[in-house]
Image 1 (cartoon, rainbow, N blue to C red):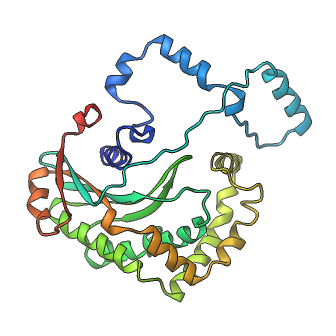
Image 2: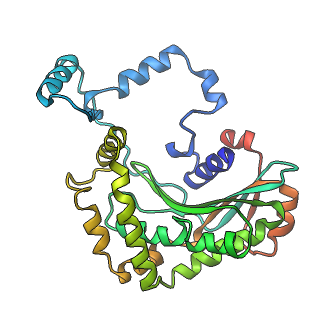
Image 3: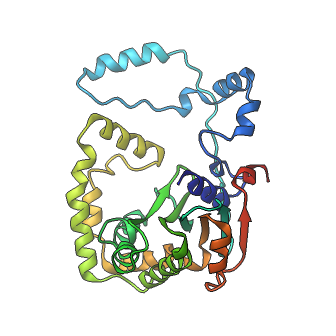
Length: 301
C-alpha cells in the first residue's frame, strides 16, 4: 500500500516537484543529512511569517494571546515561503508496474492532476466523488466489489495539498484480476462523465449533511479544520456556509465538474505486484506505454 502510494505520487508529480517525495524522506537523502542541514532548515523556514498557531479548548482568549505574544515577540518574521508555479507531470496515459515478484495481489493506483482546494469547483467535486467512489454505495464499489467480486473495497478521492492537487482511485485485487479491474475502473470513469442522476445527487447531499457535524466533535477535529482553512486559504465563514453551498449545488454543475475533472485518457496507472503476471494481462487493455519499475531505484533516476 505504501509503495503503491509513494510510487504513484512520484510519477504523477515528477522528480523536480517537492510533492514527489515522501515526507519521511528516502534512505539516500537521510543518510546524508548533517546537523548543519537541520540548523539551516530551521533558520530558513521556522519563522513567524510562515506560522499559524491554532488553539481550541476551555481558556481565556486574552490570557492565552498574551502568553503567546510574550513567548514569540522576538521571533524573526523571515521571508514568506513562495511555492508558486508548481506543476506536476501532465502526460498522456501511462502504466508503471512496480515489481513485487510472487505477490498474490496487485495494488492499483489510477489518477491525474486536478484543481486545488480553494478553487470554485470544490463542492461540485465533493458531491461527484461521493457518487463515484467516496462511499460504500458508490458506483466503483458496486461494480468492482458487489458485481464482479474483484476487491473488498475501492475508493476514489480528490487529494489536496497546499499548492497542488490530484484525483485518484485506490484498490487491491487478486493478481489474475488486475487488467479486468483496471478496465472496469476506466469504464466507470467514462460513464460518470456522461452525468449523474437526480437520485444520486439527492442521496449524496443527504449523506454529506448527516456526516458533516461529525467533523467537529472533538477539540482536535476543530483545530484540524481551522488549520485546513488556513493552509488552503479558505474564507473565514467557510464552514458556516459549507452545507448551504453543498445543498445549493445543481445537477448541471456536478455533471460539468465530472466532464472537466475526470479525465480517463490522461490517467496515470501504477500497479504494484507480480510484474510477469500483470504484463501478461495488460496487452488487452491498449492503454499506452507500460514501464517496469524497481521501487528501490525510482528516487535515484
